[in-house]
Amino acid sequence: MTQTHTLHGRILTATGWVRGHIGFDQRVRHIEAMHDETDSDALPLILPGFIDLHVHGAAGVDIMQGGDATQTVARAHARHGTTALLATTMTAHEDDIVQALHGIADSMQAHAPGTARVLGVHLEGPYISRERLGAQPPLVVEATLAQVRRLHALAPIRVLTLAPEIGEHRALIPQLAELGIRVQLGHSAGSYEDGRAALDAGAAGFTHLFNGMTGVDHRNPGIATAALAHAQYAELIPDLQHVHPGAMRAALRAIPRLYCVTDATAATGMPDGEYALGSQRVHKCLGCVRLADGSSLAGSALTMDQALRNLVSIGLDLADASHRLSLYPADYLGLHERGRLQPDAWADIVVLDAQLRLQRVFVEGDEIALD
Image (cartoon, rainbow, N blue to C red):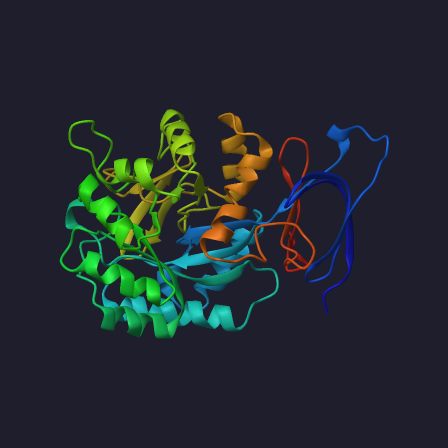
């Protein structure tokens, strides 16, 4: 049974910072402002738990392995402050995607203690461009509503990445949106016009902005330009390897609700070496994850607590950085009881010290063991 907890510190609430107490069981019950003489820098920082909408793996395990892989991944990320996530698939044969979705569904139905809440699936492929595979294998197919419905019935697809320039993909976008799926543009060789038309058709965001897509050329603008010019939401990997801080600042200025993801692989939390990313082999070296031949970045070894520190290091204030790891991804999925600290919201909470080092994590009121 979930215990009742009270924490004291500087609390980032839905309306701003409060110095005081937060009381919660599974849900936040009250937030009370209090006056004391304690130096603010000595008080813990209490933020909403992180919500990661693009997670392939961790702890040597990849989501595509199926079985209890999702549970293992959700446990590893919870220890870094992720309280909810989307289990993310790779481009693969349908049978392999089905295997992964069965494992994700099992983890959703039986939320294991000590793990982040699995909110559903981010289907990243197979509906992508052969010209912009990145670390994805060349097992691409054109999407059909029938196939997406089959997969969606196995485990709820909350986000789906596609290349809008392929076949009937643009025409399919409104039908996918009617299923409650957020369509994201990514792994695309499309033009600016393709991106804008897809947004007009109901696409909601962009997958790992700048990576795996046509870029920002002033004479031949691509998908990334459409994002900067028109998007309300897009995901970005703030590991300081996938995107230069200058480009990150441009995106932060242009896209009102840009949110951040890890794109974490099985190499996350592991020593340097070789790991699986779907059917691909990737190599981790000095914190960077690449295909085994070194030709392309292949996801990351990023965690969300480090993402927070990285955002602050490039000049964001802490509240803004927190919103991009919690509030905005929650709102993107329409989850108004997550990603914020307010009465009756889920008690998904992270506690940090003044150096933004993680001290405690609570998922729906249950404390996560960090060691």
